[in-house]
Amino acid sequence: MSNKSTALGTEPIGSLLIKQAVPASIGILVMSLNILVDTIFVGNWIGSIAIAAINVVLPISFFIAALGMAIGIGGSSIISRALGSGNKERALKTFGNQISLTVLLTSAMVFFGLLFINELIPAFGGKGDIFEPAKIYYRIVLYGVPLLALSMMGNTVIRAEGKPKFAMIAMIIPSFGNLILDYIFIYKMDMGMAGAAWATTISYGLSFLYILYFFVSSKSELKISLPHFGLNLSVLKEMSALGFVTLARQAVVSVTYLLMNNILFDIGGEASIASYGIIARMLMFALFPVLGVTQGFLPIAGYNYGGQQFERVRESINKAILYAAGLGLLIFILIMTFPETIVSVFTNDGEILSKTPHYMRWVFAATPIIAIQLIGSAYFQAIGKAVPALLLTLTRQGFFFIPLIFILPHYFGELGVWISFPVADVLSTIVTGYFLNREIRKTLKE
Image (cartoon, rainbow, N blue to C red; front, top):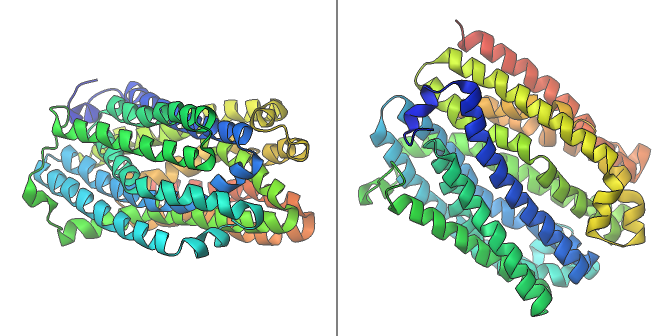
């Protein structure tokens, strides 16, 4: 693919989507493998309580890091459309504002996150034997979260420039770094939870250094100067409106972790939280190709919408859904066939091994259809329509899943928690499909 962003508006959609999606998928795969193997190392070298402890901390640290992702995706939507319409100065101003806002907000969040450490951990399910290891992990990981936020922000900007291979490398470097450091700190140096935390934090720094290199070298088209860092109200308003979609999504994910950890602790204790930790990692890992297609789709749709090439936008929607749905079906078949084998990799705990495979099947039951929900909500974000993007993003977990995990356990016990996953997937897909079809008919006319 051409080194210039103009390739997003000229190359055939099918090959362009593959060129964008494959590096994104590989990056997500390696990052997910990192989380997956990290969980395997922790589970086998420290214990199943350590898996539960990390599961408690993840939504807190990820929410702070998601500030960077939100600012990145919100700003990158503007950058893609600005480059598509030839307005490079607006793209530069947006990028400068992204950096300034990410540093300010994540630093404040880390300060308050450390200040209220003893209140946050129990609130997210870190109770009983889970509290102390979760506190050790949380304190160390939080120091590196601003670097992770800057990395996630920069990664989306690299994609907006039409350079997915560099974005892929930025995700691969910290993943390999974390696995190597896990081996050294946990296995060789016997540092326990502190070792797992330091491995994660240092890996965030490695990612940040690579992305910094990309933007200060000749690789990037976005060469910003000091005036671009000054906060601009119009840029901030649009960036915040679009970024709030991503932030709201992650906020709901964090709330979901909080509720799931507490509900499962009350129903089944630490073992149920450990089961959720394993299933949550598989959700991150197994869906990597579907999420890769979604990531690859965003800059293509945004760039061509900015250039008013609506036929290309419509084609990108159709092909993205087709590719993602096919991959979702393959994932569904693998999970339904080998859940026992998958769970046995994480732990040899008999109680967890006996029930987690059954629950995993329920969680992945609607995987073949989720492509419509993911691509549909991403489309509205790509074209700068913040309100429908926000509402559609929240349909699955906010409007359907959270109410269901309060209702269904009254009738089905712990199984009701897991049944909530596919029910929410089906309902949110129906809603998103309706609004996406209506928007296509309204704005992407021949």
